[in-house]
Image (cartoon, rainbow, N blue to C red; front, top):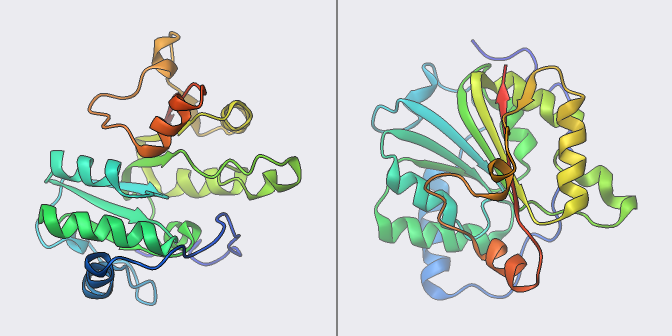
Length: 233
């Protein structure tokens, strides 16, 4: 069954520029060769059963919003070949880099989308996702831009609809104001619970964490990463 909420809300611009410097030849080739094959077609209803989106049966589905260079997405997909992954990244250079890595790794459990993640969230069927990752998203540090932060009541409502009961939402950031912002929004949402019970639960990354270039940059510049995990009730 398709969701009655699909495309019922206007999408917002949660990202900045779409393209950087000229692509290297292998990345350009991966982008032109793989993106048309792996990109979600939102003009058609989501498949039933949803797991048939991937060529081999999958036992779980994981969504990563804003995967950057794809280090985390590729690492997780390699560790869990029986999980279907959806990666969303509007920045062309980052998508090309990830697809180049995907081609080298020969993984077949990743599908992608190269535009606004809210479009994917509104397309997905109810309760089809086991895990959502939002890792080092753009913090929009100026107060006048805070409304562009991806964590918001409307997007948490979207998460709550597509996550299965007991599903997880993992958030990482090195920006204190965004961490506090996220905790405040979660605290106001009736369908999410912060799982932390001790300080190490937000100071230490999750099991199997490969690290990312954003995390490495934050540590080099003296900022402390924070790792938050929330349970969909």
